[in-house]
Image (cartoon, rainbow, N blue to C red; front, top):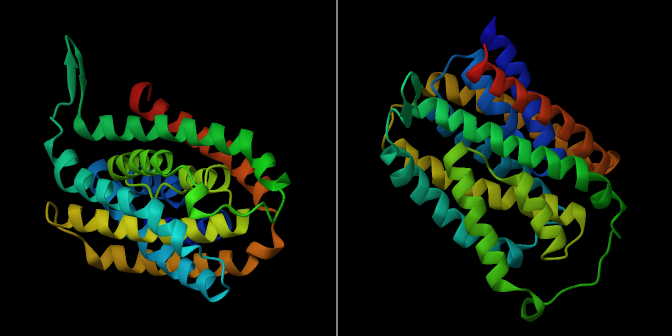
Amino acid sequence: MEEVIGFLIAILIGCIMGLLGGGGSVLAVPIFVYILNIEAVIATGYSLFVVGAAALVGAYRYFQQGLVNLKIALIFGAPSLVMVYLTRAHIVPALPDPFFSLDYFILTKNAAIVVFFAVVMLFSSTIMIRKGAKLQEQNPVPKAVSTKELNIPILILNATLVGLIAGLVGAGGGFLIVPSLVFLARIPMKEAIATSLCIIAINSLLGFLGDWQNHDIDWTFLLPFTGFTIIGILLGTHFCKYVPAGKLKKYFGYMVLLIAFFIIYREFIY
């Protein structure tokens, strides 16, 4: 029964990614950990594969529509994907277990990753709730910015931070990438969503390769789950033009906020 629920939610994960250009891992990791009872470290790795594969399909769909900005994807994606790979291959395996202990309190490595994920979710939900309306109200065709006009050091710093967070929590980083592309690279919302999926696909799949060498992968579960997520992202990219992305992002932000509080409750109170 748990797997059936998981696969149904996998379709929802894909739909959200197609509509928002990210957000899949926000649902994937809690599903893996709390519904399917997968260890947090393994769950974040699985999330990278699922989100990366689905994002690749979604990015291709948007590329066919001419919405992927390859120049911006390269500038932002290169430092980000390097950081994701290094984080999954070296930083995550090097984290101590237990991560922290004090008298009668012990924080395991798995719990620390989940808690950090919840903190990231709180931050991302705030962005989605506060910026959702602004993204929707943004002029659909902002003034074009040439490569020379871009603040390249800020973009690279932002991309590196996104890569670190994505690697630690098994997230594609779309909730950070989309606002960055809109407000720093100054590209239209639809183009930012499409370009975000391209960056997420590269980041997540390369990050998963860094994780693959450290864990055994249950492909009999992971491939079907990914398949259902791809079905969802095909639906999401199809209906994207009919749904106001800014309002959807705001409502999704409230759902992310609730999930974050649920994770904190499960780890510290339940």
